[in-house]
Image (cartoon, rainbow, N blue to C red; front, side, top):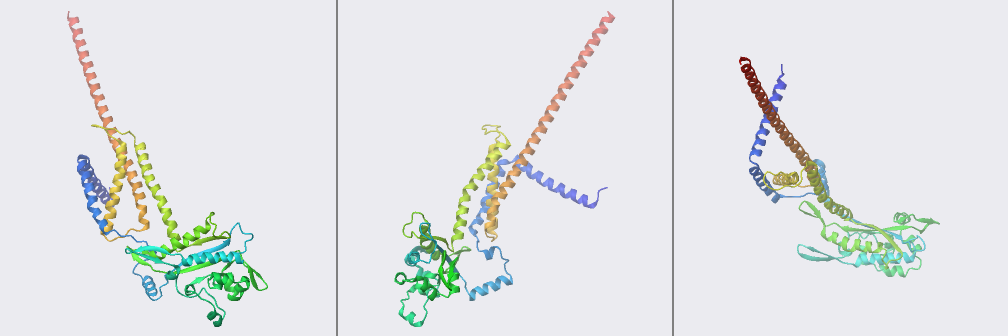
Length: 421
């Protein structure tokens, strides 16, 4: 005797089976109407794309919303905005240099010339239809940290340019980032050890050599430029067009030119560099390169489906094509994507980086369903064919048995007639 749970389970299973049997029967008897309704439903759901929004801010993607931690973070940022952009050059000597010491006047002069280019070169970007031109002096974070002066008297005597109002770090600040002051200096090692405290000087150098309590050589030094952040939230994404343009057109372009083997302007220098936009640039390049692979994956799936499912392309009445069905399976995945994204957008949900995985997941599900449907269809055809063959064989056997019976009766009658005669 079945338990209550088994009875309930059987009823639920029967209900589900009956529902999908009706749906399958409707689709099988009205294929054209089903296709038209599917396309129409996708178009209706696609209206939600008018509310399409994307989100790329980490605090919105990975941090639970409406929590105390989020509220306190926003409160802190309202009072103390830490929106500073970091750009760094690591200066070394090139392979053409006689030694690997960057604290020679020749190397420092070329490094100062490089910094002068960064200071004076302009960038241009269109913001709200208006072209804006900027330099490092207009974009840098203000702090006046980079330049040095030992006493107020020296500060009054020295020419401190506008660059000294910027927040910079680097040993070139010992000459106030002024090329003329550096060229007039006959003892750069003494200037460095005089103008900069030794712990600060060592922190700016790579593998420094210290002799007699003075820094005498180093294999590299760091030059850091801080820009004032000008972030704007556009379509739920952070955008800083002014600083992005300067970093691309000035900082990165100059650093790449120095790193190029064909560069003759700075023969003694070798630089490694990173900008605030570097991660997004590399990430974007990787994604762009993968787009071609995405398109190739669709083609591979289509060819795999067609080759696995069987027959070649056929045309005409009563001709089936598994290749056409393979294409239809991929089109069905596309329709489901359009309908799903449309409904989600209409419900106010945003599109994030993780959602880009959905097409691949749905392709896997759609391909699997295609195999299941085709195998069920083949099994149904086979069973009908076997049943038809069995019926024909039984009918033929019955006819043969009837013929044999008739022949036997006829022979028996003939034998009886002969006996009577």
